[in-house]
Image (cartoon, rainbow over all chains, first blue to last red):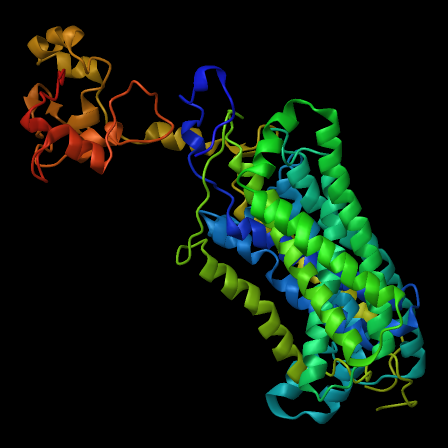
Length: 400
Length: 159
């Protein structure tokens, strides 16, 4: 137990009875992390669908499906955290309009619905093909999925393209809203000095984009490696430049946050400084802001600025992306758990101990985190993700 | 189906979404309690429900009616601020119409009731007597399983 310097070394009563342990633990670390992966992956997809970045065309659909797979599990950690998860639906039936937290149900679900409609529009051609080919129960499944419209013609293809672009267009501010909202929930807790900053939504949003892009790239290179190593190096290069830029923005905001509090030398800094130099020294100073940030900045900088090609490009890109995947995970931990380490009396710190087998332990976290990847794998067994056989290839007139 | 309109799928999608919305509104209507107060955000019926629950605790005054002597001594006891029912259990049904109908309880075979309050916690005031497993051992310097009540009177456990 560490204490701040108090007159006479006083230590008595600095932890209030309701503050003896960290209540928001690994599940609440995982929730913004998975939500961030959704937002980040969606942004990659929108870069092609809205902004027409042609290099990202081969992964535009992959990014959408990955975003959807993560999106399905974004709220699961919250259910494990709740004491009465069977009442979770009440945030839909009686959401209190003055509570940011209670609006989560609507912010999250509306975004997931938007994502599902976008995927549906883009993959409608595949669904129709399957509905015409399949027999038995699967035929019924695919027919229901195409809402019993089993023809696909150039007019509807043209129209779908416009709708997809529109959905991706409104999807960008919506994704920003979703993750900015998560940052807002933390940033608006004025009782926790380490959270309470108006920068928090922007930090969460930019780190979401970074983690989503980095995770997407790690998945991409793994899938391509399994498929025999047909990497698209032009894509890799462009992707790394974008990731580098996104991370520069993210890191600047993170540095800005701590610099600002430090420069103000206010009441908050009196408790944040010993927090960062004490309990969070390894995970924040050395990890989040040190190795896991300086490393990717250098590696991705080298990849972006120098003429590196082939395997070297691939290895460096994966190294940089992996470090960023962990940087954001550690950042979520430092914010969520770190903030709660400050005792509510602001006179010292409480302890946090990792649990493994408990309801909110590491094992549960690992299982929840693996679930999106399994979901992605299952979806990829049913629909083509990298073959470019969806909306973008011109269909022949009439029934396919 | 022969050559549907290029927008037919979106019309059907819109119909599905409207259907989902209607189902949601019906479910909302069903699950939100009738007495839900949208101004104060609570279920008004909950107050009447709680008030209609049978009483479980009688309060110290109800004990004093028969146990006057113990009650008079109470002012001098170390545990004077405690409710009798903290240790003796809920006693609203102890006496019915002047006749004892249920026994008061006290567990004098274990220390859990003492530790309910006196188990060591970092958040408790420094001067408050509190014990973790090590402190109990140091405190008694005797074999394990020794009860607090072996030395301390529960009503007035002054050392």
